[in-house]
Amino acid sequence: MDHDVVVAGAGPNGLLLACELALGGIRPVVLERLPARSQAQKANGLVGQVLRLLDHRGLYEPLTGTPGAPRPVPRFVFGAFPLELHLLDENPLHALPVPQHRIEEVLEERAHALGITVLHGRQLTGFAQDEAGVTVELSGPAGPERLRARYLVGADGGRSAVRKLAGIGFPGVTSSDPVSRIAHVRLPEDVRTTADGEFLLPGCPVPFRPFTHTRTEHGVIVLAPLGPDITMVATIEWGGRPVDETTPLTLDELRASIHRVTGADLALAPARTPGPFTPRRQVGHNTRLAESYRQGRVLLVGDAAHVHAATGGPGLNLGLQDAANLGWKLAAELHGWAPPGLLDTYQRERHPVGERVFMHSQAQTALMATGPGTTAVRALFGELLAHPDNLGRIAALMAGSDVRYDVDCPHPLAGRFVPDLTATTPDGPVRIAELARTGRPLLIDLTNGELGLADPAAGWKDRVDLVTACCPQPPAGALLLRPDGYVVWATEPDRADTDELVRALRSWFGAPAPEHELPVPAHERPALEYAHPRTDAQPL
Image (cartoon, rainbow, N blue to C red; front, top):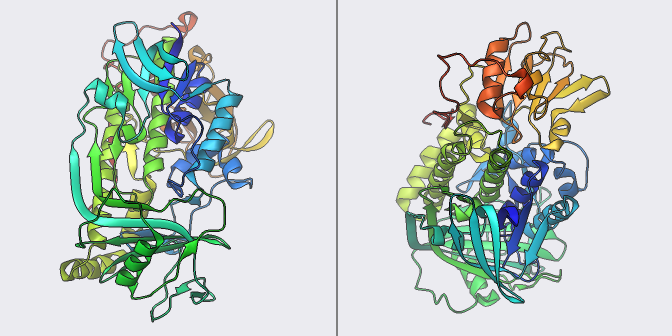
């Protein structure tokens, strides 16, 4: 066998998956059809719980250049509604403006540090799978090649060759409206800004908040200053004339669109900052979700499994958490300690999360559309958002923090991404995010060892790290964490049901080492048979 896993696609999702596999002791190889990493402008940042995940891997600081934990953003946007998140007692939404090529650069540096091979200029052309593995055919600089691996993962985007060759259906909704246009430009001198940083466009009485979708009666505009000589400008229009999709977008076309949406006439110039910042046009929306994320020894992550409108930036939050969810489970399967059904929980947990993004991305597009009916709906929706409970629900929806996996544990933290806690260990204060950087499961005793968890967990010490610490006003006495940051068992500070701890260890991390093996109670149900996510969201 040449490799444990072949990952097709060296975008953010494929690179993070490869890193997760390497942390789990697996040998992946990454195939990328492009001869070198693309510098093209794609995603403009990271939004949601994914930033806390990257903090768990020590990748947040390289992206920001500053130490410390991610901080929630005071404001965001949903369907061209401003979200005043600073009004919330608990704000779950994080965001970081960073171009996708920088995200890929940081992830590729980490991949190389972990000894991962990334083969550029390799196009997957076919594969065949059997009971033992997958034979992957590809074309490269030296001609046709063939690799043999135990698993193949498609992280090769919305037009995924892996998904198509696997015969996995990709149902969804395709529309010819709206038309989106985007470019990185230099704004003319007659565009001014207020003391609050809002844009004042010539001829427009109302200022435009930066980094925000602003709806007018004629469409939507976004103005995002990225530097002294570069501003990202985007428009969205409905019901316009047919567009020749074969012709490149020009700045004159974007200028005309800005005028239709806002009434302002802006003399745009190319950005001075090196790009490339090629103007882009997208006609209509394509919202699709794979029928299955797995077909035998072939799996999908990221855009290969789901595509949707980019409004609100949910794509990398969804895709990178796919990769983190799959990585440790696939590693466990390959090492042979995975409990029955563990790899199947990837589909059961992540497919409903994809459905949720499928829903809210379409809802946001509908809320931005032109017409008096939409204006009336927006008036009502604006009243609902004035209530903190509803504002918090929307923030949690955008963050992805409203998803709670069913891990068969009643504690309020069970099934959720672990809170950002600082605990004191014998070596001093440490954040849980720092403890998680090995990518191994963690059992964290926050009572300084008073719960006595070492003996019941001894059978899993080869794959689960036990950390003894203390924490002022801990949210739980102990936490059992999966490598992707989710709590699968927790207990109160004054007691611990060690039988339930052992059951959780068995269910998620397999049988104990042989010298610690105990008889399994006859009444214990098969591990993970019903694991699936649920959400805490309620109707507005």
